[in-house]
Amino acid sequence: MRLEFERHTAVITGAASGLGRAIAEKLHASGARIALLDLQAEPLQQVAAELGNDAEAFAVDITDEMQVNETIARIGERFGQIDILVNSAGVTGRTGIRSEEVESADLHFVFDVNFFGSFYTARAVLPWMLRRNYGRILHIASIAGKEGNAGMLAYSASKAAVIGMTKVQGKEYAETGITINALAPAVIRTAMVEAMPESQVKYMTDKIPMKRCGTLEEIAHIAAFIVSPGTSFTTGFTFDMTGGRATY
Image 1 (cartoon, helix red, strand yellow):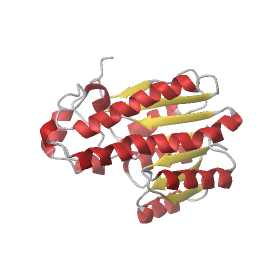
Image 2: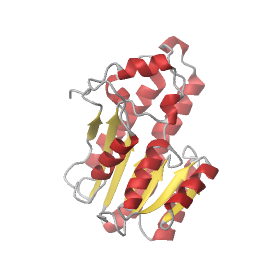
Image 3: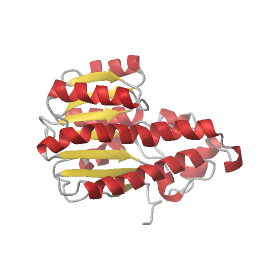
């Protein structure tokens, strides 16, 4: 087994299921020590137990700035370093509705999780990375953040904000040994997607030239590549994972 991430500490949000869990499993199998973050404490503990050694669960609400700061400090002190952050936690909010039907409360909630959650965690880990002049931050964005999906205003706008943040952070830390990138998937079959109206999923899948959803294995593979030590000359960039949908 190639232990590319041996002695690296990775923080993964949304790690109790879906994309976050798949990425955590991939990095752990490659030698990383994993700090699993999620709001769902029980399933998070189950993931930690299944991964075994060098995997610890930290139940946290990433929309709570103080909780995030305290949790990242605990992780840094526990492992002595933080090398990788993958922001996988995300919500879609209400979908299949037009802009005049969007409720402010839902819009704020989606931004709190998708944008502010990613901002809080990145801000908290950066001082740990700067200590060693090394780090890899990956924000999970979406093709919706590039192109906009009709019926998904809150989600599309929040992911566009994540992409904008990635561009800024990539430039700000370009000379520090820290790379900060985003990944923009099309539809990945997760519990979050399964909960969406089938008409919304069909609308998105029909735009994919491969005519299928992406898999968790595929997203874990590209995420591991992006946060690997060898991917060192790319920062502030949004990687494509859309089955041919993205043309720029």
